[in-house]
Image 1 (cartoon, rainbow, N blue to C red):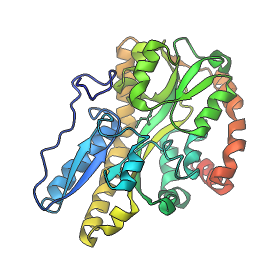
Image 2 (image 1 turned 45 degrees about the vertical axis):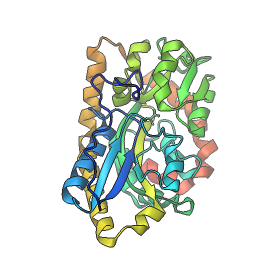
Image 3 (image 1 turned 135 degrees about the horizontal axis):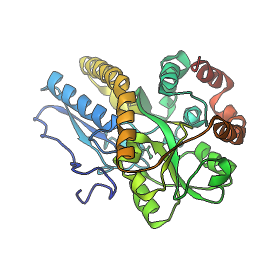
Image 4 (image 1 turned 90 degrees about the vertical axis):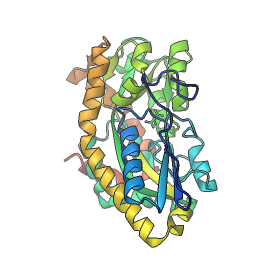
Length: 328
Ligand code: LMR
């Protein structure tokens, strides 16, 4: 670890791996918050960098800044609109200031698995979400997966009542706040880089995240096991500013869009395996992984269902139907 990486990040984590750009190349700064090693977003960003810098050599040059070393997710979109950073892939929970339509991705127990998420994103309802922030100057290019979210605290969580009264870190989303309110818990919005420390010192008792983040940030070290809930999804939008995107030379925009699309397909296809490896690594570290019985799972589903009603007007009934249809 170095001064820039969060205390909980994976061992041997490097800072930016940027060779420097040549004069005359248009620089693309890509800022993100996770570790780059063994993480779905980290790997996808590195592959994107490698391909842009090889295939667009002399024209464009990408620099990737992982681990919140440049901006955390609260700041990166503002920085993008100011032109200080050109690309990022924040979680779909981090666009609250720009649209409420992406709240669909935080509906609890909506998607059966990551394949259902993928089908919804590929549908016309899903694809239209990439354009949902155009009026705010942000252009989505594609969706990247992390995985289904798991739940943990400093004590076992098997029934909804187990979460009552506990403090949980949530991402910056009002739907997630409503989820934990519904459980009688105390949600606290907090940026990703602060979570490990907050769990360690007891500022919060619990958290929810994908296996790759629970592993990559070592949250399992400071929790009493992880409950395999799959209660939500952690996914990303690769995003840029409309002004920057539209200002690119046509050939550059076309090549960049193609490379982003190809990297998206390749890495999203690999994500289930990567999340499984992270889960296995968490188990190998001696962490207890708790499975819910069908009855316990049903209790969580029922406890959280009222959240859907409250946020359906924000996302639109059609979008909700399209998302449900993706479960097939
Ligand atoms: C989080 O804040 O927990 C995630 O959005 C971090 C990430 O980018 O995976």
